[in-house]
Length: 388
Image (tube, rainbow, N blue to C red; front, side, top):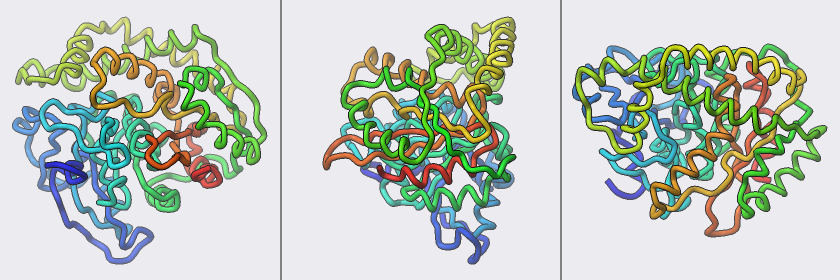
């Protein structure tokens, strides 16, 4: 397939209710989310060949159908959900409607492209280490990652269980919020988020174009919230990244190692290297990561007052060009980890908001990160930042 149609692996027309808060809205789901009667391919042909069709919808799909939405397709994804760029060695790269010469972002690549291309009004993805936030930023649409545990991941192929969450995309923040109204539990607090902590280190790693593009959005933040600067220090970031990668790899191998040993699938180059590393991560490294995260949670919680959100760039640069070398892409993947791991490691909600850009310019986005279980309040806070 070519063009925007490359977003979808299969067109569908499934509905169960004609009335409800999402009546008339079309949606697609990522290939690792179960739809009754279809194999969840996980973006991998050997996986597809060795797994049976789903016996029922994932609960998250049933809830959307019950709210009146219509399921119109399953969407491409990066292989095994273990990448950030949107390229799949077996099935190709969905074309980014906002920047056809650039990567669409992954691993929820097809879901984001389907929304950006107008094939769906919203789309479900999953996010472990940025897999909804990267494609939202690269395709110029709203992207949301929920608090860990807020939405059931039953019927979803796992990657790393303590990091995996449901997320979704929309072109319009009101649609994104209405999906949240259907899927999200009530927040623990009803108080509006009214203080913003600007995570200065994350802006410092942005390239010059991105820093300049962020200024109008930061000005809107300053008008809308009581602002302060926040920083965690290089030691925190380097230690967090090391433990995060070990945790993700250990859990990915725990989820899929037996299947890999039994079927010996052929992986694309980057995914193959990640699983080769995952096979070597010892239980002691997992225990160290758990201990680090447990201790660091107290420091992270101290950054958040009951009404505080963090402000970060979603990515420190625009989407990489399709022609960039593997070495350049690896460097950029590393930089993106630093902006994504905070919400992922500590189970926090994050919303990515498109910035106004000159005609023809690649999309860029700014993000708000809320305390755990502040998902609804975080979406409400983002309304005021819509296309600053």
